[in-house]
Length: 404
Image 1 (tube, rainbow, N blue to C red):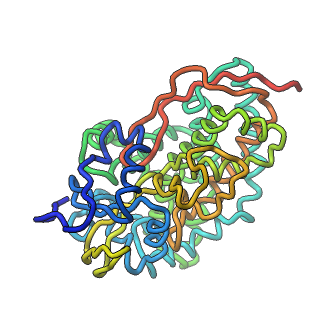
Image 2 (spheres, rainbow, N blue to C red):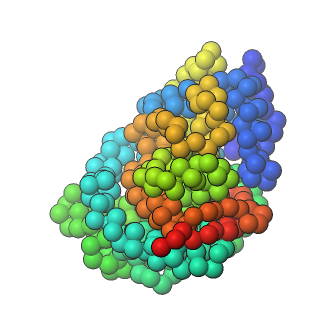
């Protein structure tokens, strides 16, 4: 992305690189710097405007007319650069296109529509946790959460069993593509190879099992409510955004519970707090750390003038730990009122799949609370650097099964 000919006057200039390995894996020192520098900063390396305080991020997300998603929610500007894939009808569009897409997909993902999935989700979670808990130790990322999410979400969409693990590779590519063309993106592209084509092939009607979200979208195309092109693109949106975000949201909650034994005890005593654990995990360790908007007009934020056509870098992970909004924000606390957290976004672009992610997370955490007495970190956790996500590569756990 081209930089300004001259840096803007009167705005705090940030020379740090938000996309360095250090800041991607351990971002909170940078986030404090961004928040304390001012309500708006200038990220010199990329020529973008940065906002990291809760109030301003919330305001930007709620005003789609001024801060557009249609130019891309990553660093690249679709008005100036051709995207590597057709833009998402949900993530990378504004009303009225965005509204029509939500009207098509939204009813399929409502809490009421999802309730029949609670039983099969619970069955899969119970079988998996029982099997892993008997060993006394396992990796929460690779052996529990990825396996569970690929199974239950893949079944819900109607994907074939074979090849689902490619969705993890696709998610790594997708979310790295929202950042700069750095080594992370190049490595993700090299690893993906034919994965985007596999994803495209499995968005087709013929590849999807009857009864799943995918088949229901194609049924809408049959009625004329959406086009066949839209049906495929909306299935692709599910496959792109529905795995990695949920995997890392669940891992965030598990890490919070494992490192805060008092909160694990609360969940053990009352497994219905799994709902609170889901929300607090997403606030405390937001899976999506950075999203962009593009100004549609000249605008002023807290006295800072931002011209039209500029990229505004919204630091969700920083806003969700802003002490101006949250008391003791670095603590994982199941009793916290998390209403208004930005982990699912805000405004018209708020995550349309949040009810699915919540259901998957609540079910698995409740099963863990009922089947496992103690949980603790048993080795060195490892982050998986990503240009957008605060992701995990490994989270080794030691557990003690609860009495039958």
